[in-house]
Image (cartoon, rainbow, N blue to C red):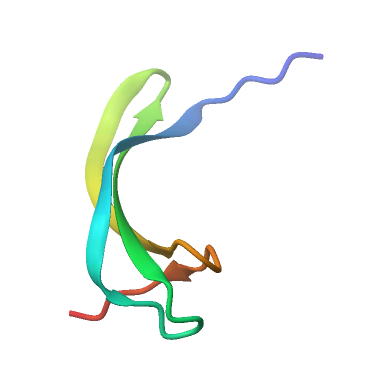
Length: 67
């Protein structure tokens, strides 16, 4: 039996840096991580997107930034 993955999402960390502010849950420092994701269909790139994610350094929760 052979399984073939037709669709794939690849995520790559571009960089991290300290963000201003503190965690609302524990008061720890916040780190911002830039992540590039690429959707592929049969090894053909379909979609590229860069996201910025925020994490607390003490409680390791993912934080959501509201614009």
